[in-house]
Length: 194
Picture 1 (spheres, helix red, strand yellow):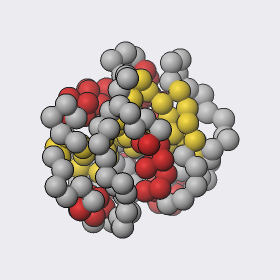
Picture 2 (tube, helix red, strand yellow):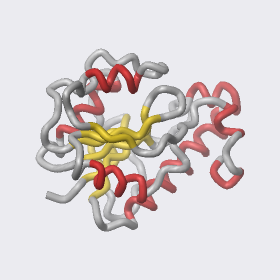
Picture 3 (cartoon, rainbow, N blue to C red):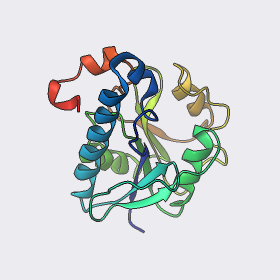
Picture 4 (cartoon, rainbow, N blue to C red):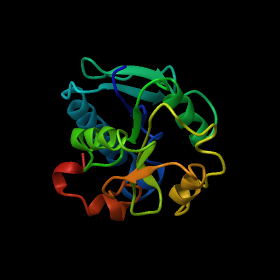
């Protein structure tokens, strides 16, 4: 079965994406940043034919333009962990990595590195500077509840998730930062601000 990269994303709509960032830089600038970052990532992943790319989008029925060759699945309901678990479970017989769409530095090489790590480990994580993670990948042998008890949007998200993987071989990729605040956004090179 072909490896699958899942891009976890909100459909770019004014007032519904990057709300914390939007409070600081305005909703139009926030949606432009979100759309530009999502599109850049999708184009980079779609160009790499060594894995399949799908978008796990929310809202489930909202229309979004996708590059040729990129599939779409719905996130469904529940908290972030339930939605991530559901997306990964759709590709349980093979290797799958799930990546957020607000990491401007991430690209196809990171996805390939995730799949390479999964040849030697049962799970792989891309740690984020804020204590969370920007990528999670798993092979076919997974914990029953990989995201149980995770304090999302906190500095404990990665540590909480790792507890669910006790006794399993794990590897980490390079640390990257997501963009949640105006300070994060301003620290980006101008070409990545949307």
